[in-house]
Image 1 (cartoon, rainbow, N blue to C red):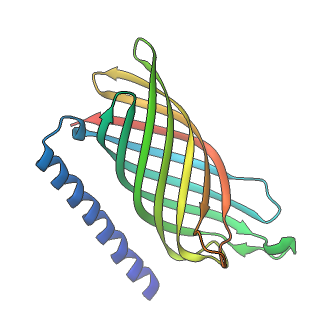
Image 2 (spheres, rainbow, N blue to C red):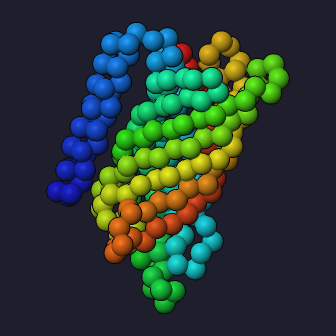
Amino acid sequence: MLKLKYFAILMLASCLICVNFSTAAAENQGSDVKKNWELQLEFLKGNVSSERRIDNYNVHVLQKMHQHRALSFYRGFTFTRATGYTNPKGLGILRDGQGVGIGAAAMLRWDKHISGKLYANWDFAGSLMFYNKAHPYDGRAYGFLWRTGPSFTWKYRGEDSITIGWYISHFSNGMKKHNPGYNTTGISLGINHKF
């Protein structure tokens, strides 16, 4: 129970820091671009590996910080819920792969106008995640979530849009030991609104 208390404090502190930095940056630069926020809901299914089968349910809250021609840079934070198991060395012993995490996120998006209100995109994103426990089994309580993939955006009203994408992702903590990384693939639904 004590671990959950510290995790809740870490989650709250991370949210406050992200909101504080985002608000300060928007006020200092006064740019119209920084009024765009995107909420991404994502389900990533674990690969069919004999050793790791972990699914991720992710929520990304991203603020557009800069746009240069076809490239846009976003920053924000990620909430994740991982479910599943690992089977170390394929011995048939299933270990807990569940975890709840939060962390800072960044995304680079390349977009290409197709026709009318339709755009094709390619996203490159990364998050530094902190979990409520070592995730997955024999891992550490932190790690990196990398994801990339194509998406389509429909700008239905001005800068308001809906994005549907398909992503591949990799999770690991980057260390040589206690680094049971895993890969996932899945879909994402994004809602972008200009405040």
